[in-house]
Length: 366
Image 1 (tube, helix red, strand yellow):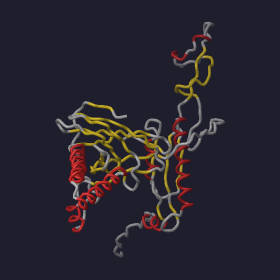
Image 2: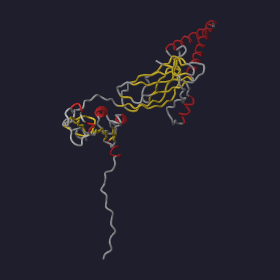
Image 3: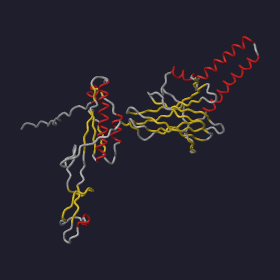
Image 4: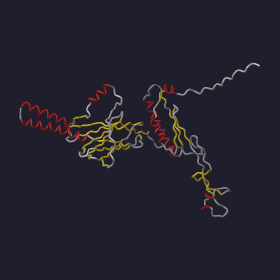
């Protein structure tokens, strides 16, 4: 539900231009394109049909009452156009995207509308969020936007695929006041949202015998935070690690033995080269499943405290640790695209050839 917000008005947005570099014919057609789009509703179609019927009867019969009724019907059309235009004018729309989104997990997108008019409110405003290459299926409705005030609403969206979700603008429409016509205009507002791949819960195998995965070290005695066990105190031990509850006998103090902190590295590989010029459906499905599996494994290793390195067949590499979190790897997997085998061979760096020794100048004969 929309709610009011009293803050500074956002900057006005220019009219939407789908083609930033139009041709000469496109510029001419854009010049003659009306700034508003008008669409008849179901009630509007009935109303227009009744108006034509009354007009036809008035012309054939010459009845003054029918002419009066025809004038009233036409005046309602004029009033509807004027009032809907007043509602659409001087509106600014701002979108607030979440910092991150994930496949299969719903997220909220906030839409704020500010009415710059000083005296006239806007009624029955419907905002449609436009995305490039996708149908517009999310709308927010605002019943009333008072003068010099803002209303905020949000819609919920559950993305179905990973990648870059590019928002290009808004479609602002209204059916005020009679619901006979739907008048709309378009505003530009670019915004990108990175959709991370889905992450499934994975239970990694427990470490046995002190052996870790990948390039991990072994668990041993050291100065970490984990307690490995207790033992009698030796010369040179830190007195701060004395375990006093067990050190009851004089000259027989018990010492807490700590585990050594080891860095655990895990290497993951993604085959991003597909045969042929374009990948087929079966290969694309396997590729998406592999990305989902790598994302799940990376998150599981990072939760366990490992450092994860991910590389592709084309040489791209990303690394993430506990301090960075899973965002670098998930963003990398969200934007990765398959590469054709022919293109990968063309872009591959040349092999390292053996360096030739510099030629020595010939010595003069003795």
